[in-house]
Image (cartoon, rainbow, N blue to C red; front, side, top):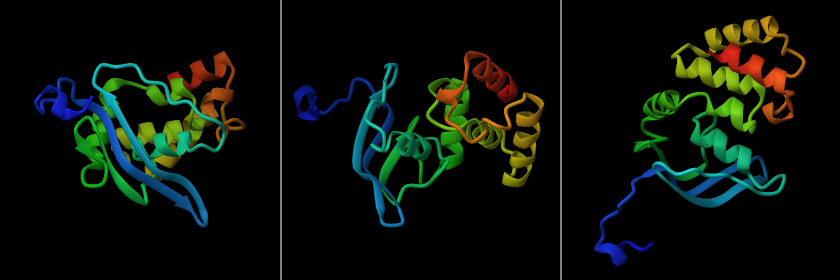
Length: 160
């Protein structure tokens, strides 16, 4: 819907919005100006072929990595200027990352450590200890979507 269609008012604010999101790894362009708008209260699925940039987009929107260009907001907070507020906003909604499986078990643990305001060093130490304790060391660098049901449950428990 264009804003002119309803007099400029936006009836449903965006939970997540991105304009021109870009990311490269060396010479490889992974995201080339992605635009995204997810209204508050909606259910959203991110689909695409391997290599389309889905995981990269999720990592950027969850503040695990930074974009090379573009602008994005999550929960009304700007990723570039207020990443702590973004982390706090997604921390309130729960443990989405282990459920969607787009990131590895280790990245899930590190994201939760960051959401709990641990330093990077402390977060890595805690994550490593929990991955070992819950017998997830061998799978730690694999996408959570590849985990068995039991492994996903153990990861969820480790993250609480």
